[in-house]
Image (tube, rainbow, N blue to C red; front, side, top):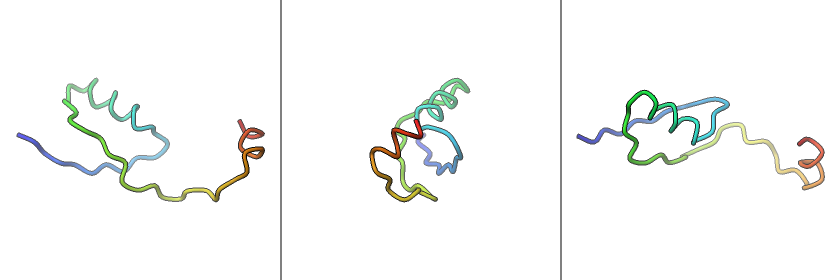
Length: 52
């Protein structure tokens, strides 16, 4: 049986969510990013490098 769920997570990468679900014994068919809330404004490449 296939079941579709929608998750809303904070401070997590898609790969981290997949690993956590697999560790719980849940078989993952696919994960799709639908929407990101609170996306910061686009920054210049120099600003991004300075913050890294």
